[in-house]
Image 1 (cartoon, rainbow, N blue to C red):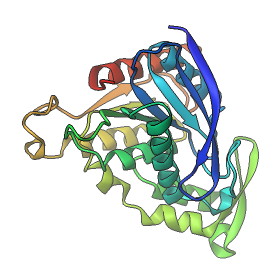
Image 2 (cartoon, rainbow, N blue to C red):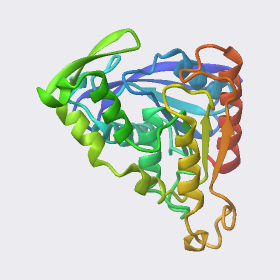
Image 3 (spheres, rainbow, N blue to C red):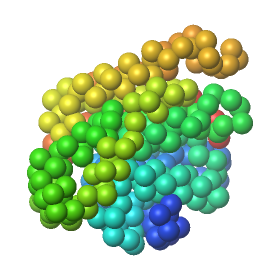
Length: 278
């Protein structure tokens, strides 16, 4: 399907203007809508995010990809952000997409963006009044404290002095102690266990940034939930809510093999088409 793309700006959850791009099928017909969130210190123009977003649009799904506060083309100070602002920005992106494109039917996030997507998805149910039909987590962590610990190992001054620099992806980033404190404060596993919509977890067994054990934990937390709590009329009643896809041989950023992104795009599109109706 042919695609059209255009840039947008909207108010973020932390009070700053966020930059986004909408990739959508070039059609007047109603299509499913998905909000795509990037990884920690990344942005909407990361190669994998761009190709997945465009790939979904070419497969009949409208996508809003955006820069979180202080990253890419968005305003704000990255050092003053945290997981709470990430979640607030995602909620703002959903609200904007609802008004700009149509009801949001799916969330997808890469790495820490996947964690935010899972956190927000926990607030939705299988009730017909909730339009969100599924969530897709790509190389996502099962908690936020692991990143706090990683940052402190990279530079103990963050905690000792209140701030410090770390090198990520070849760039220097100023990290404030409030960010680490916020990461430690969230109980993401508890929120994941409350997810009641179909979930797909995609993860590489050889991911050196976020270990495969995180994917197994996410799946376990969701599927161990008592399905008797769900509405008997739900299409997912009595079935596992979370499926796991092993991205054999893929790296964390999906940068090494082009076919990995094609595979992810195909599976994500199939997931959205199965559970989401525009």
